[in-house]
Length: 310
Image 1 (tube, one colour):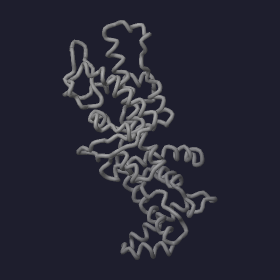
Image 2 (tube, helix red, strand yellow):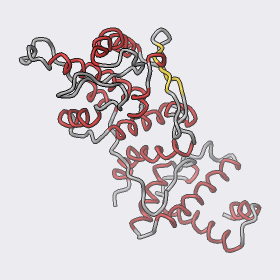
Image 3 (cartoon, one colour):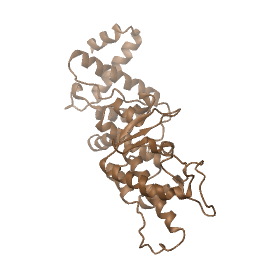
Image 4 (cartoon, one colour):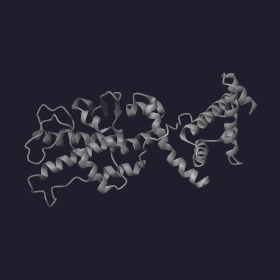
């Protein structure tokens, strides 16, 4: 460990800090299984070690110091040519109280939310009721909305802001305007989405216009509530509470649309690099994207439970 000590000393750290950090690094190495060389240690081992420290009663602040020491140790190994990358470069422990993490829905579970959302047919037993047409239109609109939230990870305000000009069907793209909290971006549409959104825009939306201001430019329109002849087009899209209730009845694991967005971004992080995901999610700061890296530990935690039972 003398070389790592020299590395710490070269950074101008105090004698007491060098001693403490060297001790922390040794403690992590000692924790590793006999068959695991420190050069081959992965995020799984680090997470297991942090879990071990937590069970010993260490607070997040203290464990975060240990985590940062291991990061420095891994970076030093990279400089020495004994390690190719730092598997915990973006792992963080935030504050004493961790932010609420939603249970991550798998890609299959996300698809089921969309597929299980049914649109009534004209053979429905209530098809002859006066309200059935607007009910069916609202379901068709909601299906298109779900497609964008599950595939593009949009927030509810972003869905409400989409205009006709934002939808680029010929190009297979969707433009999302920026806001105080998010950046503007252009996202790719999947081929099946293009067909669905085209059907919505030119058929469903045309019928919904009968109940809205004819000058309405928003892509997703409201339908009249009971006792009202038409929507003004000025209010927010009043669908989220009812849609959430419907999906919960069909998919018990569904909590809310923040959970859906969290799941989508978490899956993106397994497929794309951090900066790409930052752009796709519309995050102003990369730190906002990094926060979702914590959710990736769920899969690692399953391995930890299997190979490092406590």
